[in-house]
Length: 117
Image (cartoon, rainbow, N blue to C red; front, side, top):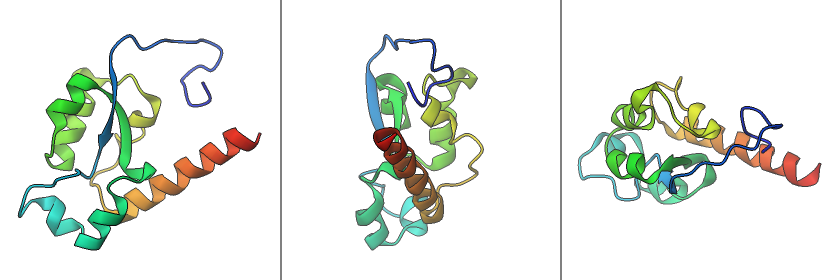
């Protein structure tokens, strides 16, 4: 509950939760993803915490391997998402290696704080 809107209220999500890779696992050839991320970065960052978000299964399957703006539109269809960590992506204009690294560091630090406090 450390990352929920209201830690005093336990709110259960009733749907199927899935893990979405912002930078896709299999970016389409000649896509914006391949232009923005070197092959080494694709391999290094695809499965790291900073590149992952929680979504409903339906939103995850509709986001697929599309570009970042398309994914954001799907993540926030109807203007909302059920997951606090996913909400943090809304103000990010484009997904870059720098954004992925920053988010990774923030999330790892949060986890360490939760674990050791």
